Amino acid sequence: MQQDLLPDDLFDQFRAMIYRTTGIRIPETKRVMLSNRLKRRVQATGDGTFEAYYARLAAGGDRLEIGRFVDAITTRETYFFRDPHHFQWLADRFAKELIERSRVKKHPKSMAIWSAACSGGEELYSALIRLAEVHQPPPTWELRALGTDISEAALRSAREASYGDRSLRSVTQAERKRWFTFDSGTNRWKLSEELKGRATFRTHNLLHPIREGPFDCIFLKNVLIYFDAESKARVVRHMVNALEPGGYLVVGPTEGIYGMLNRLERVESWLYRRPDGG
Ligand SMILES: C[S@@+](CC[C@H](N)C(=O)[O-])C[C@H]1O[C@@H](n2cnc3c(N)ncnc32)[C@H](O)[C@@H]1O
Image 1 (tube, rainbow, N blue to C red):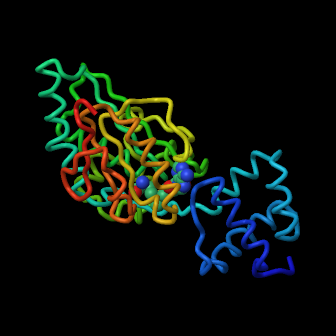
Image 2: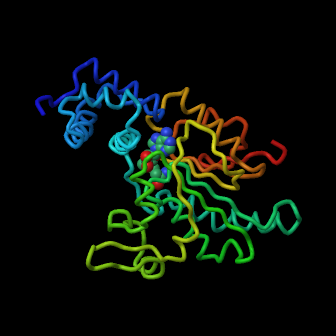
Image 3: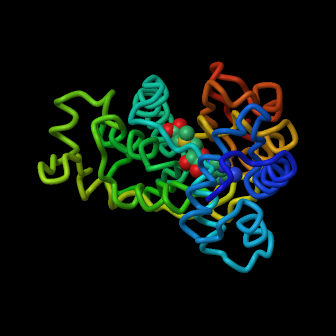
């Protein structure tokens, strides 16, 4: 391949395509990063030039390659127990509140959690670990734990639930021993089958409403940083609609949506609750 950097016009066309597809606004300063990520796809497809690769995607027929394009442009790096207090709150406060609400018949014996933009499952599994440590939800309850992402590569990793040391950097030795098995052949940590079996993963684009729900708790973290105001507002609308009255939205530190959450009650800077009658 001759070209190293995307020329101006194609850089803008790709940025517009990425925005339409994902809601992500690639900043003008990221030309080298985007060129490098796309170069690999241009080579893998044999298209030879950025222009030919753009034409392939724009024609819309090659769904498989559109998926790989999304995989190439998304940033999926994350780790277990990122913002540990979010998961501690889930085990200490949230689970107890649901139990109490169900005791006074304000909630069925069920718990529904959604990790929206779940990457390799680290966020959803962190939640399930903390809940399992306090034996929640009770075995007689129905648990729905859903992870969704726009990237198929992310979902494959989430379903496989096998992690390197980087992903487990905040997981203690005791926790590793309890919830993972080390595979010395691959140098990876496999999550226990039991926890893995509690989660379901599927493709979903945050720009669209979700058909499952309502949820008692939604995690929306480390994904909206490059979304513009219009896309953020769209995502927030879908999130609030997907929350059960009395349900919680856990927001990451870089989402930049605090000013858009006026339909919710603020509990903490990172935690919002849908009013009971709201
Ligand atoms: C950095 S990861 C964050 C993962 C997780 N929320 C956490 O904080 O641990 C960002 C994820 O957002 C996903 N993503 C980006 N745009 C998306 C969209 N429009 N819809 C759904 N997922 C999206 C990416 O594929 C990536 O897996």
